[in-house]
Length: 342
Image (tube, rainbow, N blue to C red; front, side):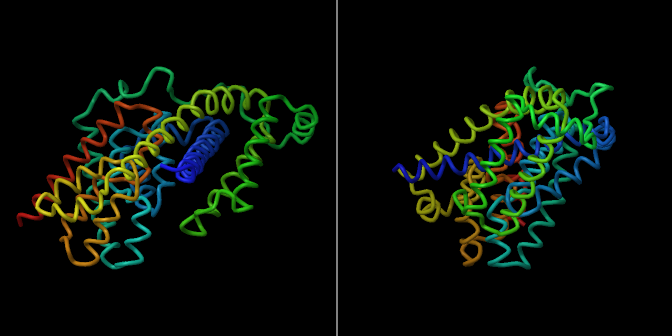
């Protein structure tokens, strides 16, 4: 693996980590502003959790999946909702599929949404001890009755900006620097323009939030909770996973091996789906598009794989990541096998 590959992995890790943290920051702000009312309503509605998560997961790319991981890390959505979300998530492959065979890609997405709902419901019914999956230092949103951010207090905002605390100054420096890197193209490589626009909008909103919230909210929620507890852990696990996958791709040609072992292709499709990476799964997209493999193979791959969607989950709970992948592996093999037989 050369230096350019490592730099590419660093950039990709930075993009994933930044988006997850931006979403966590925005979610934390909304939760405190609404006194947790939206969170409590969503917690009481399992169907609402399933629909929200699965629809976010079904959107092309991994941004929706990252958002649901952030919600799960705070106990807002259940493990079943998270599992169903990853069933519906196709990651970057969705862009390729909609460009190569849009009609069939639409049908596949609708099927994944239905399967995701079934998997989400079944997982929550059968897996009761879900709280044990989250470590003790990962907790629900904390709300104190007196701490709603005073975002309209102009005098307070101006006073805080004149006497910047270390935490506020560092957060503003990091967010503004990240925004400038995107705008300058230094962190380019976006597959679609709307993805770049999403990053820009999310970063801009985060800069506004960090600028106007009170010192108490910034220190207790954004700094101690979001940054200190999540930043290093998410980046380290994301970079580590991408680095290992990169090494495998250097010394092992996944695409050629799959094509030369088609007799085992169903099991291979499910097995490769365990890899938290978008690239290897594209082989099944291209094989299906060329008529080499049937639809059940593509469906199995799509059920098990989730692009980079579960990478941030590794930082939250390795046990949860493993159980989620095994559940979707079993569902993918079972559904694909049944369809092949019939």
